Length: 511
Image (cartoon, rainbow, N blue to C red; front, side, top):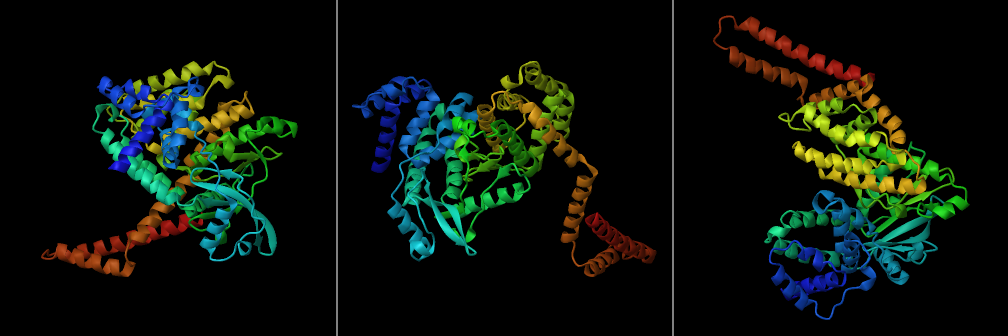
């Protein structure tokens, strides 16, 4: 209990320095009591004048950064939920880039040696000083012997004792949110559910084997996409605390001047970023959900080189179709068709009017038609759309909100590379191709094949199935004077149906 009190005291004093107590106080019922208690607990703390020109969300982001790794991850999670905290604060929280002072190279070496049970020189050579550090882990460069070839790698290492620190912070956060849920002011924020989700996210980040698996899956999905590169994972050099991947050579996407000085095709990079994000989210249903400038490098040809696969998004088939259809609907200005598709797919309640939903879509789409391309934000269009869907009892998966946040980030990075980029023009051919493939005969046959194969897998051994089915029909028809023909007909029906299903599965698998 004492530890929890000091934990709360720390939060109050940091919030006072960042002028966040005032923000919270605006929505508290018993404001006088709240003000007296918080002012008493923050005696001696003055507001940081350097922060007073920052927006509310930026000050919240800086305070969370100061509070520790769990709070940083919590802030990053909240930034994907504009439906809870509002678009402005969610957008401001995206500055949480998780930069912290590194721990020493000597400590990193000890962790490597402990994980692999041998000396550092038998695992890595030319092991560097830390080149980047975050709240959960930091990165070093090194070399490995890869089948007789000396290969440059990036080595990510978890911070010492980070699991214990996260566990303590999360335990205290759970206590705090349980306390806050007693007050009506915090009910809408659903703090306990946010903490549970944060624990789930951080659990994966505390085991670097999960990040290795994420990178491996994304690399497999994108290996034929020449304009997007995911570094190779070296599985023999991976443990729960160590992640070893191919070293990326390129210029960071935020070094615009350097990119221009070296004649990089940054306009092509901007197009490639949008195209590859759409491919990952719509075609594959698995996308890099943290595509900010710090995680992207460019090469001379305008191709993208990605790093840091700790935050990934996944979309099911229904949501992928939803995303493709809604973007394409805005491009074609066919609002009624899209509304109809949504209702037929059960994405909006059947009691809702298709015409009214179509009108709502038009209210978003028409204002952007005559605007210049550079003034149109697809991210903002999605924000408006998700706001409207609530009126039509359409419940969106959290992954769609993560997708919305990633799209805003991608769009922002693309516009910094090319302020004149036309998101709609770049998107149209990619979405048309996907829809054509998705609705084409080849894909329909594939879906039929998968359905039949699923049926076949669930069927028991055919002779045994026929025998047992025949016995069942014997029982059903027992006592009837004309049961023999009926049994025979049933038997042939079962045999014929089974053969037909098996044959169809075989034929379609050969197409």
